[in-house]
Picture 1: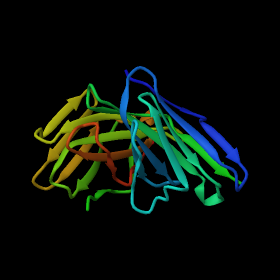
Picture 2: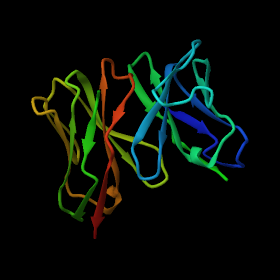
Picture 3: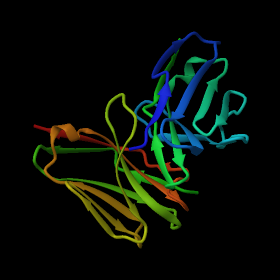
Length: 115
Length: 112
């Protein structure tokens, strides 16, 4: 089946630094990618919708200057957590939409810990 | 707005059937999904149902959809310890590749 990868799978960083998370669709072109955030023992909350070649659409309450999303190509979207703080520690999951099949595939997630 | 709700916890004995329930509010939902999340892992799509269906069976999994009551259930037959995980229901409106709205997740514990 279709595969979506995320890199890194786990990252620990100091408060104030920026962290970039990559989401790649490995065998299909993703016209749209979604970024979700999951808090411990909580459900997934949509952060933003990323369309290739255009600006991301952020959900209410998500700071676009804090969570920078770049969907540079049909196979890659990046989420950069800028000036990370401990409250940004979370599990970030991306999904990619296969436009040919109208199906969405999830990445394995990236666990971010900000010290 | 959209809202998807699930009970938090379910405990069953190995070999029994598990039924996980989900309710949603958006009557324009087109696809409804069940995902499984094991500890520390991402989401695994288990099955999905199109809104014009009322039942779908896939091996040990049976999905029932009551569109009138906006109620979705996942039945796992002969539940095994490896089924212990968090199960999320989710809905989407329009095409299957659109954004998903997730329920809070039901933690299934299977006792040997």
